[in-house]
Length: 183
Image 1 (cartoon, rainbow, N blue to C red):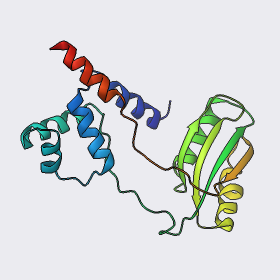
Image 2: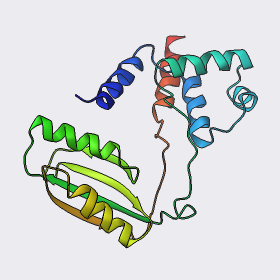
Image 3: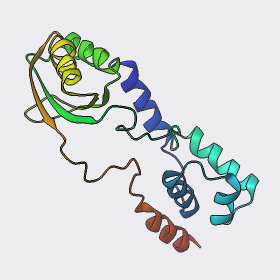
Image 4: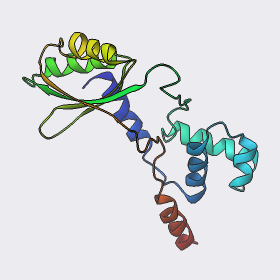
């Protein structure tokens, strides 16, 4: 298991514990909508004191529920307008080849996401590029040259219908219901 997978396992283990309550979910929804909200605004909206909010945020961070905060960019504005998905087929699945593939992929800045899958193909990559020439370089010089890569199947995105990083926090109502039942 590589260090990134190890890190993700640790994160998942840390987030286990006391279940999230309705207030936690409300905080998380507000942060997912806009992480630039002020603590005062969030505290007011979830009916907590500023110190109560800070305490909850620290707990959510220490448990790994809140992993980090980032700024989302318009990829077209930074000259990365070509978005595609690449299915990767490996010729063999020896542990060293899989580890090496994962290491190389994690170092390619154009690869936004990499998922190891069940099914016909082994990996699904989400990639951005400046233009077709840049994409050709990524596919031919970077990906196809990785030992063990047998075949690449590329799909270019024509229109991005939905794009979000927000998780659907439907459990919020379940948490509120459980909380109400406990009282």
